[in-house]
Image (cartoon, rainbow, N blue to C red; front, top):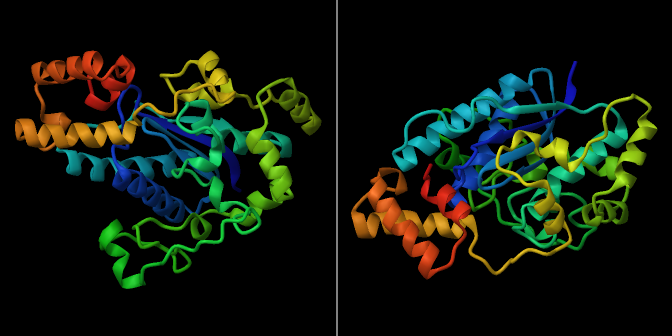
Length: 305
């Protein structure tokens, strides 16, 4: 029997999605893992250093094993990297009760807000928020889709996927065809209610609401959702939740893309993974002193200890 889980795979202080192709491939790898394990995906969010998913499955470990394996093979081949991608184990949290599920789904979809990369969830493209009540929320543009014969170009010829999976011209499976969007919409009831939860601030009201489940289980909170991410500061996330982040600063995806280009053009390397420590240190100094980029962002994008 399937149970509901919140899953998180963290790469710690390493960007595991460095450009748009990586984000798309990560989404595709998770879609294929869902199919392979007979699991149901509800909501998902891919950040530069970690992922959050709410799923229904009989074996969360097998699901995450398949996801991590396929994505790691792609990532290591692309960047000439070796070794296991991500921390030693993924984080799993059992979700029991309707209000607990609503809270978990909301926190996953609002993850970009808590990490200060977008002012509202709808502005972040690497999660499933815009697939929910899409037409009712005024999102009428349908992206052109690829014919089935072109899909293997983006996932490999040996990859198996169900006939209902539809891929956009950008090479990523449409979330409406992969995730159980109707179940998520039934969970939030109406577009207005959904929008309320996407803009609702953290607080005791969330805890009180979840007590209505009557199961005695600890309420889902920002702290419990982020427990699987080693590099997190809850106080700072709550500040970001109030829209007090610098959205003008360079994003991880832009910085990582630029650094990999620099590695090729200046040093003749395939990516930052082939740079020496001295070369990385020189680049880090330029980024910190000349471009005033934060040390933590430099470290994760340059893959520095």
